Amino acid sequence: MEFSELIRTGRAQAELLRGPGAPPLRGTLCVTGHHLLLSPGPQATSDLWLLLLRSVDSIEKRVAGDSGTITLRCKDLRVLQLDIEGVEATLDIARSIEALSSLESVITSFPFFYRPKGLRLGDAWHFHPPEHYYKRVARETNAWRLSEVNEDFSVCPSYPRAVIVPRAVDDDALARSARFRQGGRFPVLSYHHAPSGTVLLRSSQPLTGPQKRRCAEDEELLRAVLAGARPGARGFIVDTRSAQAAKQARMTGGGTEAKAAYPGWKRLHRPMERGRPLQESFVRLVEACGDLEQSMDRWLSRLEGCRWLAHVKEALSTACLAAQGMEREGACILVHGAEGTDSTLLVTSLAQLILDPLSRTMTGFQELVEREWIQAGHPFQLRCAHSAFSHARPKHEAPTFLLFLDCVWQLGRQFPLSLEFGEGLLLALFEHAYASPFGTFLCNSEKERCLCEVRTRTHSLWSGLNQPKEQRKLRNPLYVLNPLAIWPSVEPQSLRLWQGLFLRWTRPPEPSEAAWEKVWQIVTDKEKTEGSQPTVSASEPQP
Image (cartoon, rainbow, N blue to C red; front, side, top):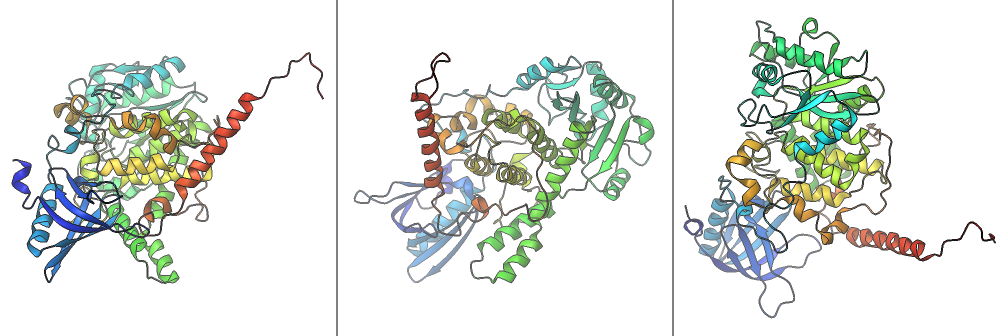
């Protein structure tokens, strides 16, 4: 299908209202296959306004007299209003936006057409391969190896081609373990904690079922994990479901690791919401943040009722439990829920941020997102199909990755010197996960990205974000390397609403960018001053 077949009206005269603090913009509105453009005309001082159509979450239209209004609610939580001349033009443009913004084809999406100046196809896709992290692990321990048992994605369609596994377990055993795990997601290494000699693993649930089936190779794999750790090491299995939910899963073919079958491993249940309840919590929070006329009591009631901060607390608490098990108990940790593609990744990635100073650098955090979310098989295309405004009944949508970013923001607020990146990077990742000109967050797995040739036909987000002009907006000018673990407080008084995301379009903009730039200027001037001071020789007398 050609894009032109879906465009009923190519252009119209319109006025754009962008929210508090932004002046109206009037000009010619144009619809293209991927964008909505508004050109203010040759006499105007404003630049061309551009909106990626994939950013539109819902559209409302109404007409009165000889004009109409289109309200666009975007996936990045913006609400835009277009006042358009002509009833027919209004309806045709609305239908065009609806059709173009809901196209499901990956290979016709904008990243396959985006060719920015200064970037070459293939740049940055090689920055974070599984082999890169394995080299770090190999320098710390000889107990693990890089396996290509999944080279053709036949063992586990949601895993990357290469995974890190115990050296003592061969590929045949891995394949049999995969058949015993939902979706083939057998236990693989997520993080090696060198100070304690312990490891963090992730997987999906075992398929024990009502018959309480067992798998010798799966049991062998977890025995090898403990044997490869420090002498006398024990393990904890952190199940992100309630004990009752795990029991119900066994009735339908899933289940948990039997204590007798996995000696040395103890199971802990830390229930975390996922799927529709998490999506509904997100929707209710955004609705509350968008109501500018509610009373204080009403606002506080709605903030508590949506339970978003409760989800933040659950995620950070469970990550702390996993991190404490490794750091303070000297235990190996296996994290899984049912599928192992949502709350599991949330816990493993946050635990690494707590423990690992390298994950808190700009490069290390990008690698963490790539390795623990993108390559690990979080289904971004399903989870981020809609944001908080869609009228469609949620199917697979869930803001799990947004919850991760919120938790990282909480860490940055509590430890303002310990993260090399700032809020700007977190906001950018949120926006690009839902709608992006780059291919990094496309599809649901590495297998799908290979089939769609994403790595050879689209640009990597990391190549865009790592441009020097972007780095100043994304880096934390106050960053100081902290070699210690950072243990967040999860008390209610310590957790805050992420205003920079949830309120940034509903209130007049604060001079945050100007303040950020001022801090950068102070730090830069200080470095220049220190660098220009003459060094004093040890033999010279001190004043």
